[in-house]
Image (tube, rainbow, N blue to C red; front, side, top):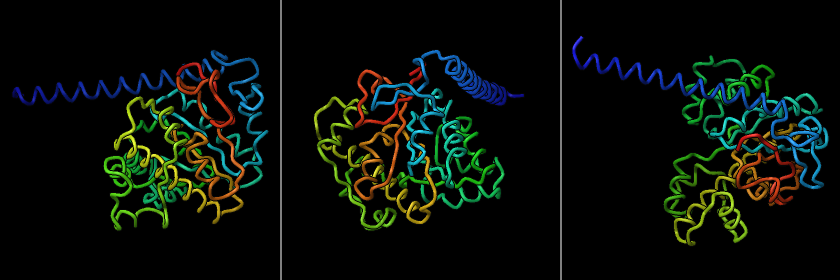
Length: 304
């Protein structure tokens, strides 16, 4: 073996070790999170959820029972925080079991152009390894975080709905603003979509993303990219609802989009639809500063 081959072998082994270590940490973290949540590590007496309207504590089961008449359930998360994934499947299972109508799951990580692949997965026409490749074309978070949700949807024939805007369009807006989009770019968006950034939305973005700089073109473009995301995902959800009026929707979205000023507001501007929002407790949104204008329930967590 020549020196180059030896170096290649060492690098390959190092890479395999790093990948193994990453997933070992991930599995361990998920397991510990589940253990502490089940043991009540950071939960208040009564359950892991704070009902914001009356400051009472609820279990996931109780919260779903109270809100089961809703048509859309938003469950927010930090995509890269494994602690936020511990109970995602439990949310879906509770709503699926207790609901008296069919269920679908909306995904903010999948672009609308991949809907056929999602349909094929649910129908059992794609092998796991094939679907994982599609997953990573859309998303950069570890498959293990969402695997059980996709398997549950497949097992129970629950439709999966891709909600996201083509990322190249969002990147262009974030860099150059909504006005930079060409007619060809607009063809990739729902017909008639607009990008209206209001002062309250700007304040919301500052709060969620911790923006401390002055209002300039970069900030305006960032706000336009975020509101475009929220608007398009809201339109896609409403389109599905109009075509399937008897189906409830669980929407898994980054908590910046799932906050009431995000996708829920864009839906309410277009249609009066019963909705409920569940958000995880974070450094920016916690039991001491949460309001009903943020979320209906705050998911109390051991780790943030």
